[in-house]
Amino acid sequence: MSGNILLKKISGAQITGESFAGSDCSGSDGNTSRVLTTVGASTAMGEITLFVDGDFLRETDDYTLSGNDITILIKIWDTQKIDVRYLQ
Image (tube, rainbow, N blue to C red; front, side, top):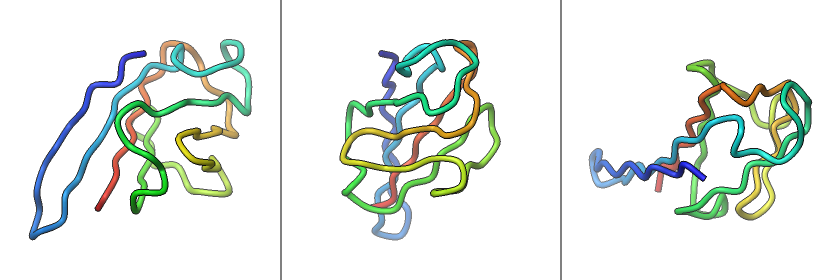
């Protein structure tokens, strides 16, 4: 897994993040419903923002959350960049 951790503080809130490639997801290249397991933080920690190749994804429409697992409902190719940001 890639899992580069990013930490920033903004007005008392902390933003953490992880960066992945599509190849870090379960499933096959170009399929839907691929699962990404996060490394550094639980999805229960706070507000989550998810980007694929810089495009913002919407929870329930484009992805679902369960613990540390993010199921991406749209097609994901192995070469795509996935960024997960957490606001705590």
